[in-house]
Image 1 (cartoon, one colour):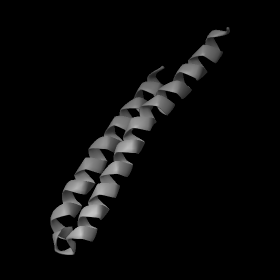
Image 2 (image 1 turned 120 degrees about the horizontal axis):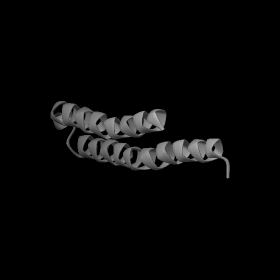
Image 3 (image 1 turned 90 degrees about the horizontal axis):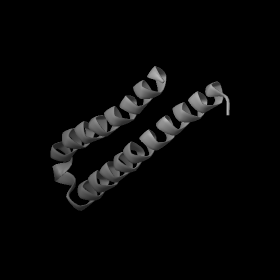
Length: 72
């Protein structure tokens, strides 16, 4: 195979595989936060900030895979 094709394939796989984990974790974080707020609506203020932090840290992992893809 041509090196350009292999580079394109590596970039695509890097973003695809690097995005699966953060996508699942962000979904689970949101699911559990909404479940917790549904069970105890008064705790919404205490749940919201840690939920956003968890989502931001999970999104950072996806950004790392994007940066690796750009460097390939």
